[in-house]
Length: 77
Image (cartoon, rainbow, N blue to C red; front, side, top):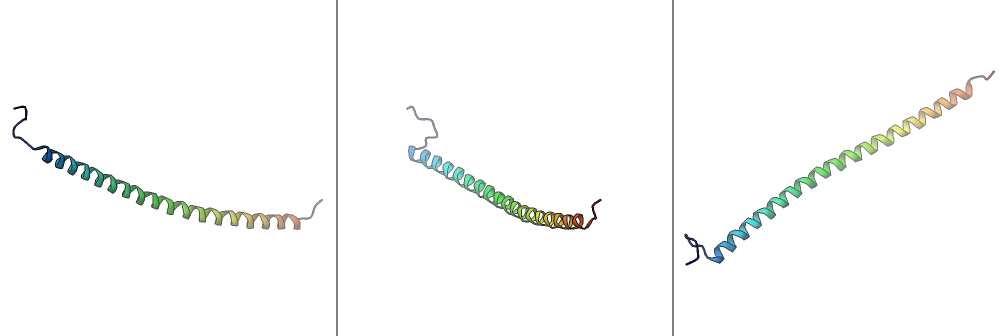
């Protein structure tokens, strides 16, 4: 006999392999879900920064207008 003992049928070995693969796929799915959640958090933060950036740009434009108006009021020599 060439089989090792305790003997496990080919079907049993395939079932074990299938179970391992299922577990690996489940772990991969869980890991990818975690990555998606992290990316969503990063995207939300990026969106907040974009809004803040636009607000700051608007403030800068308004301040530049004020500066230009003040410069226009200064008498030139």
